[in-house]
Image (cartoon, rainbow over all chains, first blue to last red):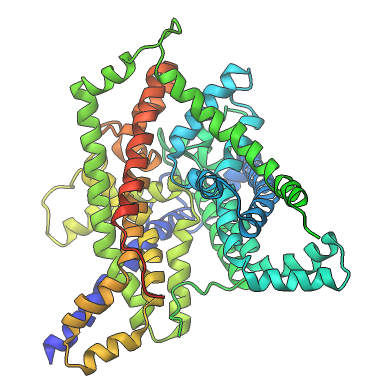
Length: 266
Length: 281
């Protein structure tokens, strides 16, 4: 009897330990951001919003949040505008070098970000654009485009193609067909790809750090540079805000397309 | 109606922008680094940069540390991640709880490595919760030094990369038809035999895929080791970062970058061979 129940019990115990392990560091950050002490304390001693006020009073945080958000939004938009045509070409046409091109489009996914960051720094240096908005954006577009491509491509199936042809046969032009037939069909992949792209850009450090300056800096890079030298409750408050953004995007994703990961398919 | 020329034009219309952007911002920068790695300050062709890396004991030590941390990270991620994935896909019966668990799993993935490693800096500090807990439980007599040790980095790395394994294994498990497992049980196989001969082999692509993803991300990780090493442990990506951010030796830095890139690509290629090809529909 025990021998039959034991594997399930051990699996549950490890799984619960894993879940606790996943939650604790984030809970500690959120908890200690509310401390009334001037040092990081967990569980928080007292309850205050002092450190959130301190964050709001320092305009450099607002600026970094704004830069991160604008960068992620533009990179995501560019990625969608590049990945959708690329996906259509991959799904529709058989041409020489198609597999090679597909690997080329996907390769930023396996490329170490530190290496790409260094490469962009070196290239930008040679044309005098080192540590600029352009250099920052270029790298982000490269790393997020495959995420959109990967989530849109599987939806461009032969069945999807058939509806598109039906629309054209019934007299709709290519643009009408694209916006009224193709876009609704790939909407799910488009939304989840775009949210993933936005977040990947928003949290990136390894690539951004090669193109940021004291003025032009994203929120994770600013946090990274700060945390290396000191840790204080303001940093916990800023970090807590980023966790809130993460949680909100997941809820958004769940509402828009539904998080059906890990559900058993029957 | 659709002539060859028409198709060619449509194809180029779709592909030109993405190809141009990736060529300009990805292929060309990588080529520039590759070319620089085979040169010196005077612009001559030389293999000196690679010789410097390959013949120097220090680089081999850093590489060994990097690979050791990456390998241990992968092993721990699998040991923790497989049961967690199995639990989420097979054992959780209450759908709301599974939804909560999935959110708990993905929230860290949507949070910057900086924030996540910062959480561990607080937890693993001299007076952090981990030491407090260990002292209170009487497991240690003095606070353990975690920050600046490979163990500390490992704890942070496993934490950062665990969700990838859970998602990869979980998705593979969810696709396994549980009627196969029932058939195995009906035919007299015990739970252990069913697991070893049916479940595990069927979700092996997910396990290998997750493991490779974790390993490649771990060997190139920079933020987590940088924050948890306290400058006491050096991994390969830190060498690259030093060259590009403070030393400004693009030739030597280029050779370091190429070395990391080649190691990564070799691993990805190796994994492609290892992964069992799906033969059944």
